[in-house]
Length: 448
Image (cartoon, rainbow, N blue to C red; front, top):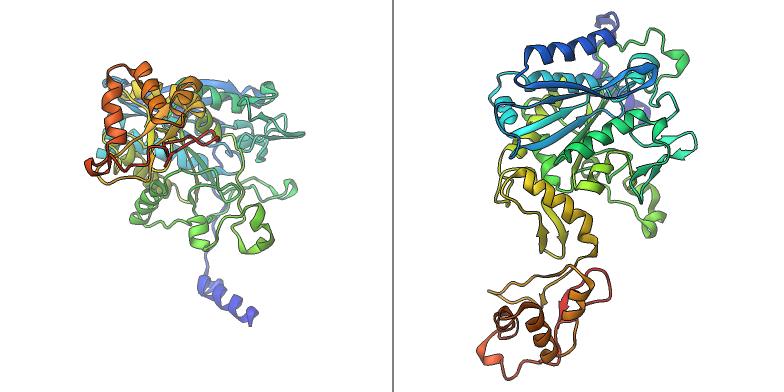
């Protein structure tokens, strides 16, 4: 029965194998063509395009960064979008997708024009040029995979310090990290795709892809790593919708597979769970350091990648859902049950600086609110120091009022009235002996 089902499905895909036409292999992009195209864009669009080398790969090949923005518009209030190809090399359509995206962004499409005015788009079409133009393997000259950070002796990442153990062995990755550090982008889209990654070295031959070679396109994250995706699934859906409108569907991971995530206690369920794992990959660097939103995409058709990136760029150009200002949704630095500490600033550059500062300090913040919550009254208290937390983590009303008065002066009375005089009829019967308390955990809530 299974054999019949398989044969039937193949018959649907290939209705007449004998009638198929054959084509010569696809053209293989050369280094001269790649570099020449980047230089051509820089010369043809000096008002939009800048080109620089951010490092050197094997055989002294430059790792290029193409920056596209409208230089006549000040950068102060622009969002920053980084596009990389950490698996460039054998996964060639990631690179060709990045090139098609750059070509579109330099054109006259109204969305491209708007994006150049509102965003700085950083594109690194070939992160690992040695792999792309010579080896067709994932790793660099020293055996390092820029995407996963794996080397001959394991991960080269020191995750706690967010540093590389041997940066001299990973110049391609150092180039990407330097761009992230210099620009602190709001969003980082890493492009992957199909190519020669599944071929053994002895099978590479002329190293040309065949006509019609595609793959299932994936938007948002990685099959191997479910932590490598935007925190807001609605961002993924906006990109999927843009691709679908252009005629390109996307696989949506565990949603389409109808599987739940795994965890230690779920491990016995094994093959009933989604098979991805939460891992640290190199693209997480921007998130860990600057709260950059990370997106991964698989590319089969360059036009599809352009369509899906349009969906992403529209988010950066406009006001996102419940936000009150234009830009990508990257401003929430500390959270506790529907309450948030957010970055602030009059323009994008100020908010980026605020985001960087708060993100590096938020782990030490303690946040809480009055619970049970009350209709018509909302509270959110954030202690940014241990002394501030100690001042409000007291067990009686007089001490709390005294501490608030000492810290806040005259404003303490208004705060006390808001916190404790909930309804006039309850003043005499309110259980004042059950005051807000902090939990002993790093995060806390005010509990009655």
